[in-house]
Length: 124
Image 1 (cartoon, helix red, strand yellow):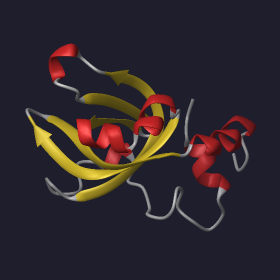
Image 2 (image 1 turned 30 degrees about the vertical axis):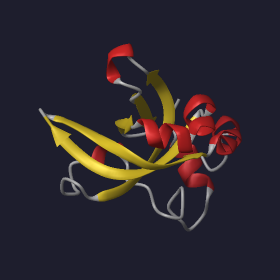
Image 3 (image 1 turned 90 degrees about the vertical axis):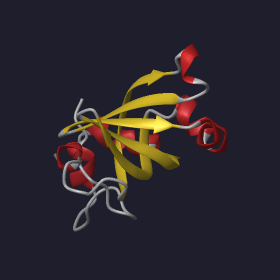
Image 4 (image 1 turned 45 degrees about the vertical axis):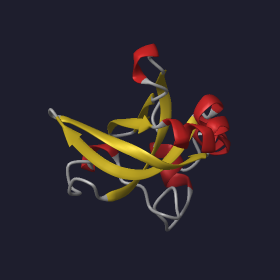
């Protein structure tokens, strides 16, 4: 399932706003530790027992995937969105290590309500 129809459903604006979201295929553009906002479908949630309460999310937009790290404090602050959100907008800091790019979550918003637009294919 692609997110592109949702982005096109909001005329004359980048979706979602505010703030504008960086597509997955442009995550190499910002420098390490830059603050970015990404959005996508949740395709994976992992909470390994050895990760000391850290949750790993994988989001997918129409251009690729985004790896998100949710530290314990952020999980507690945004628990509902992390557990039940199907479409999330995440704002955080870029981190690159060992050829892997992550967004370290600072804010997490459940925007699953926008999935209706995606399912109907409005703007496609």
